[in-house]
Image (cartoon, rainbow, N blue to C red; front, side, top):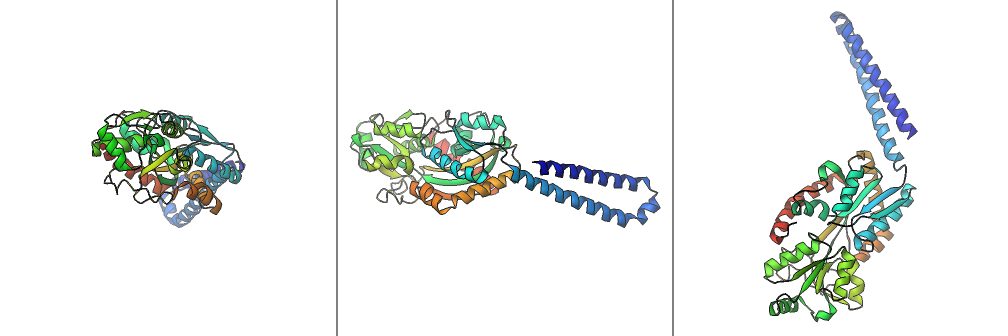
Length: 362
């Protein structure tokens, strides 16, 4: 940090030289000014070049000096879910790289609003947001007023991964396929129910859109998070829900729940026997999620680029990729700040149609 401030002092000195040189030129008679104009131009050019070079060095120094203390990853989802586990795995590896503590702070509630607002208002360069697409591409279409604004409060750093969700049913329902689910729903209206991790969450949007397209009636029961929503299916509190592979896999293995559909465009390599919603005749039903890392606007672009580089290095590590991504059904994204920012803005437009079709509003 000392080198950064020394560079700033140097920039101030050079700026003073530029102003003094210009003042001298203004004070000279016009004939003299014309005579030594080439010298003045060269002097100004050299001085400005040195100032810009030192500014670049200062920026690089600031990026290298960050983090100067422990870093916090705010995760607006409960501990134990897929998003939380990925954040903790990443935090452990970044801790080694940055030689500072990197902790995960679960600030759940209100469909990620509480955790996101906390980061926006903290305005702390050592507090980052680790969240999903719902925060910035779905919530703006659900709420008339949000306690944060993406463009005003945040900078996109990295889109880490994406994944598609499974539609799972409880073992006690006796349902073995989507056809059986639909037959039961038609024979006994209001008999089926589904869980989500809160109003406006991905499971609610996907199921409500499916209900509209199929004409079925299925009761919505919201829970606080993904683990609780899946536990409700396992305990037979509700009939069905959507879940990522990492959360559903253990319960599928011990036959407590059964997958009947997959929200991706192609079948899951973990469950190749399970048809996609597109195959079943519902291509509009989107059950895809991405996970991204964001910084408050106070963070400099140089530090954002540094974090992106370090995060991508972790994601591309063979051991991390095999154990924390491939084994859990995550697809590598790796979008950097500029590309990620463009992706969010484009998806914000496309998600508006999906939310409108689902009929969900808060």
